[in-house]
Length: 105
Image (cartoon, rainbow, N blue to C red; front, side, top):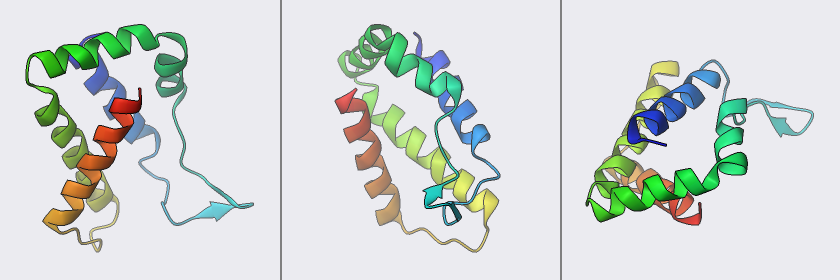
């Protein structure tokens, strides 16, 4: 897996849930979820994903990558609902969440 492929995968995940609300539940479950492609990589090709993330860390590009994912996610939230307001602290918190996610992978 390359960084470009991972970025496309993340963009695809954002598009997959783009018209779904964070706040809408149906029968006790959120309607948002992983796309089939997003489920495939961690479950079927995790070694490739892990090697790519390790490569980002070795090249000192990991921090910028994670911050970029968080920024794209917040941008999507605002594009869906322009009345949502995020502080810079929120971006930092989301960046930390993505860092923990990628570290757990």
